[in-house]
Image (cartoon, helix red, strand yellow):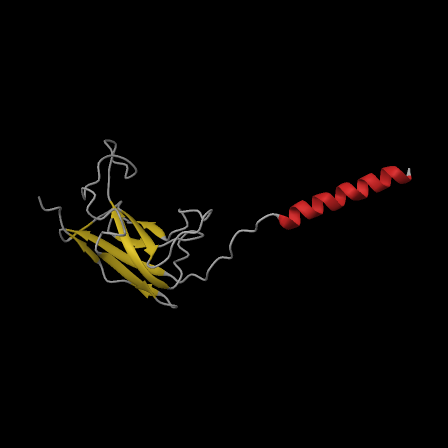
Length: 149
């Protein structure tokens, strides 16, 4: 019986060691409410997706790229950002902003061709930016124009 308890104790210590050495997810940064609006040719861009990418931040290996503040515009063009949970806002800081707006044949905003022709989809070269303060944020509207040929 003594060797059996020794084996069980060793197994238990091994499991405890493995669990304690496993990599923990990075801590969540505090978020602050962010509301805004997207207009295209002066009209609401209902269904458009807005993504905020922190300026001067490089994703570290293993960091999920989808942990970027994002939100979908309501019919009136307004949006609220979500980072970790629904409409929880965004961490304070400077952001480059990307916007895509597509609609499939069924009228759903999750497929089809980008109505903005890709002009604003990449935050790095969209020309759009925003600053999130450590307080509730009401951003100036993003006023988009068609792609010039």
